Image (cartoon, rainbow, N blue to C red):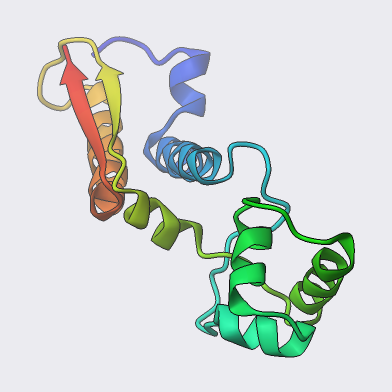
Length: 146
């Protein structure tokens, strides 16, 4: 086995798994928002529906939909009402559900050196495979190049 470098010490299996997990989240978030969404991901189990937001804001569900997705024209007064309702309800869109609805596929390429059984890189590849398996339901795949 080759001696571990500073980079290898930093990128142990656990750190690599956390880093890859965060990268996957950021790619999914970027794909969903494209820089225009002001809200964070919803990890709670409470489901807030568009009709609930519309009822609280006193507008139609279609108006709420247009504000949430930045489509069409909405009066400034209605936009403010809806944004206040979103803050009141602590609304955060479920980015994962949105990505699934988009039916987009993401592919990452992992370039690894050829290694022998028991080498450092075996653990690294194992961590990458676990992260890729965790995100497989979200249309994320991994291609390996050795």
